[in-house]
Length: 267
Image (cartoon, rainbow, N blue to C red; front, top):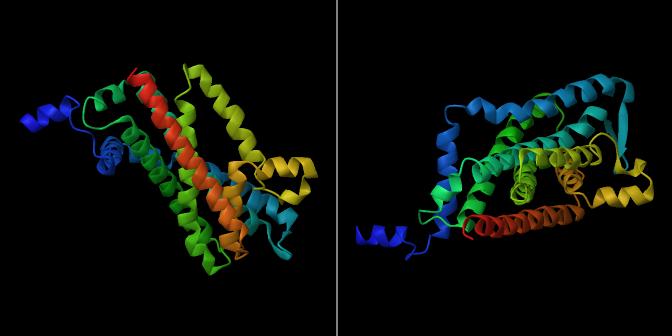
């Protein structure tokens, strides 16, 4: 009992190795009765694949990637797989806003040995789990449709983990700056251009040179480039840059989220 009182009183530090996992466990318990919600973001890229890859693909035919000609559906499928990972991570990251501003969930959690860093880590991990659920379901679909042309495609799901981690960390950090529900308008303003200008539907070389370099600096482009290289077999050193970019974005976002949660709740 003495140990418990000391921990609740803040005399014993939280264990960072398990604090984040406790948040993941909490989210699993919350969603176990509404698990169908977790797959809502899976359908958007699926509809795009059917309408563009199958419908428009019949007119486009083939595209050139790395000097090789591939079917249009094979070209856009991995891009939409990366989008699926982004959707899963970011959609769940936005839930942090309600927990932080209205549900007062973290105020209760921080009364336990779990600290702000654990909250940031735990919510990021859970957002990545949701991203992987979306990605795994979509990966099964494109695999069944024969849109994976290389054994490198076995690494597509780990690649989606990296993509999800980047958008989970950055998304949670961004949400901590939101003050009202109206601020969600800015998420659409940001996410829509990321989606449209990511080389998902056409090669990046179609852009003017100046715009091409801007697209190369966007996070979703690196996710699309990474996943597409694996499913098509066009793997090269540039994929190490893709991974480094995405991991850095996720780590920086998680660090910012930790500081922001600490500032908002423990001030």
